[in-house]
Image 1 (cartoon, rainbow, N blue to C red):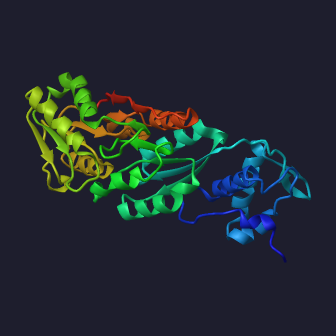
Image 2 (cartoon, rainbow, N blue to C red):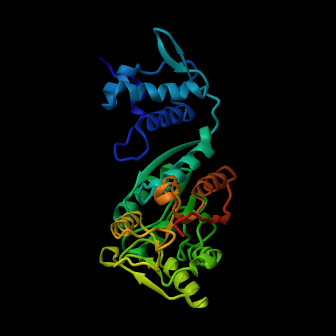
Image 3 (spheres, rainbow, N blue to C red):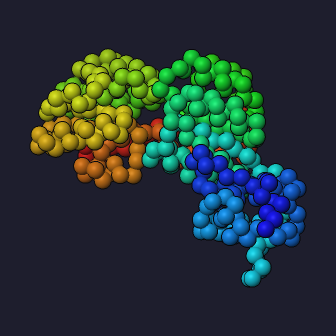
Length: 343
């Protein structure tokens, strides 16, 4: 059977973190925008799409139903789906690059996509904090998009990141989470001020911190977390004469009463909790616990863990708004203290 002519314009990238149904829907929309699909054109059947892209019927059907729900496609029982609306305008095509997918990064993605809604097609990739993969994705794909949104965290080779990002036209570039000194020109950014944020947060908790002896920051060696976090922590402790320590390996730490711990990584929080529970210490009385980055579960762990955190939902919404406004604004994201019984 002769393949449907539309297949030459549709695409699914198996390496993309964007759900396949959404990729398929995006490529259909792009085909309409590019004039490859006209009003009332009949689309391939769900079975044809499933076979051509080696995806489930449910995935193909979900893409069609999504486009029908937003008025792009119509359907006739027994005949299938057809193009109902070609007056779509030029949607934004966005290449979204995250170093990894965690609970708080999912919040950023969800709020970003929700804010943009039907105004954008988003292709989402995870580069696993690997600079080589990041560079490859940008060099191969950036030219196909109206915007390139990057959350830049890497295990190594930071000295080359600015060169790669400076090759992206600044009207396309949106930096998330942190600004990079070597990136020049006018571009949009929605960022954290790591040094000042942690200093101000600890200042807000100063009275509660005074109940404890030493404040200990769990800050692993060779981490992609910004050094400014450690700098802001040390600056606060020195300013207010708090005894402090920086612990690089929580597995070697002997947890004892009278200390308060501030962890950065989720895995270290689990290790701390195991040690605290094993020694029968009561969090919030014998020992203090503060966790970096708010996630819904932390409201309930150990009757509530105190967090200091960027407003990740606001970060996603603010990044989307810069795209909708075609703005090159650089905006600092709110940083919040969520006091709970663990401190």
